[in-house]
Length: 122
Image 1: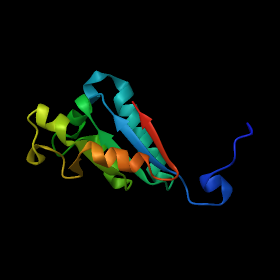
Image 2: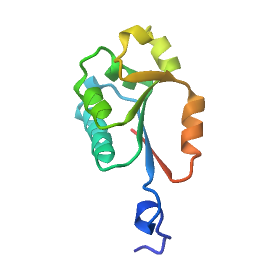
Image 3: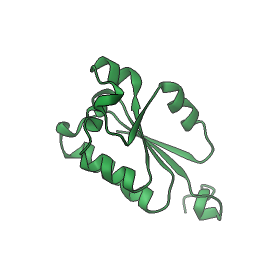
């Protein structure tokens, strides 16, 4: 190892949780979709996963048949959409996937302050 203390599941404790923030829409290229599929893999591996869609990332939650959102929900991930970003794009809850819920930056701050929460921004 690199001299760092072992934490989380490696130390026999609880598995770390992940708070993944996606700011790019799926139309921005394969990176956004791949990032969401990484979140699926983490959830399927038994980790607590929360995905926060912000800025153009909220466009990934429009409609009811977005494959990445469906897979995330099926894997047990919590999918959050930034309320401010959605409002800027005239997206109300009725236009979003039924698998997502609107949330504010206070949710982000609280999640990232949790012990063993690993935040990743894309």
